[in-house]
Length: 135
Image (cartoon, rainbow, N blue to C red):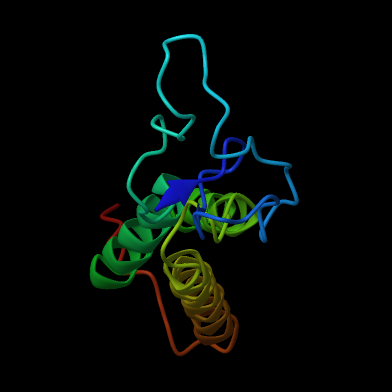
């Protein structure tokens, strides 16, 4: 099996052009400077995008710890960046970033609803501050 010299996609040994990126490949008989047939050796194993993983983890932590303020915002940004960085030739899962976006958005929505309920209860007099002033 040979790999594309541009994107690292695994491809047929007889392919002259990469089916993913369209890069023209060297023929089987051509050799590189080291004297070996050209293969793409610098490709890492496929894995998820790191920012997408961070977004997913921050989203879970934000929901479990009852909404910090900055965490979901950072997680949402990381999720968006992670889905933008997704490349099917190098990454395994786009859904990690999508779930990170969903979890962090839910955390932000829950925080907004909580703040709105507290403001409503305070404005209607159902929530009174517990302050004893002794004169």
